[in-house]
Length: 206
Image 1 (cartoon, rainbow, N blue to C red):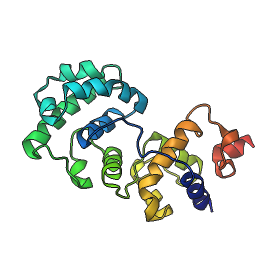
Image 2: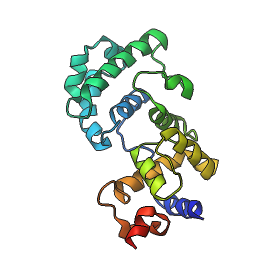
Image 3: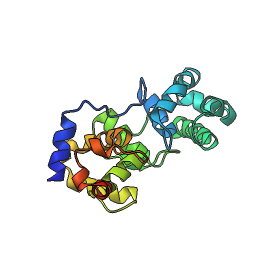
Image 4: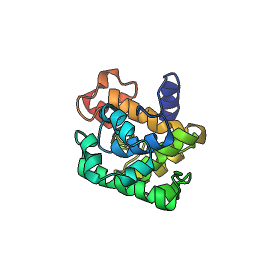
């Protein structure tokens, strides 16, 4: 019953697959990598100048890590992310001829690309039925008792089972948007939540 209510609720809302700014697949992949444990709005602030200086994988491969870091120093984990982007550029040039792999298993072998990044990329670019699990998806799914796990892969597998396939490429953006605006980590707007009767947090407040 809850799944039906969730689908009805979200289908009536215009929710983007991603709030990251990008103009091509290269920019999207880099932006998703930068967004790990960082707000999309913050990534959007710094990405424009980053992409002007480093417009492709070749330029990333030729750059020094410190040069990349200078553009991303205001976001989370700049040292780690700058190093990964440098390695990503080198690998894309040396092994993939600057073409981003189109399959999940190859994507997750790239520096900085985990399950969430690969799923977001594939769902956005190719409209594939991939579900990405980030902190918002994990929080909302557990609070609504859709899952009982903190493991991203287990949550991903369970969500695939719960939602009809035609909605798989929308589930992540739905739950992320809900987690950002209603079911927040702190200061949740439980009074505005239409699913509070299903929620472990909402039940405690009722």
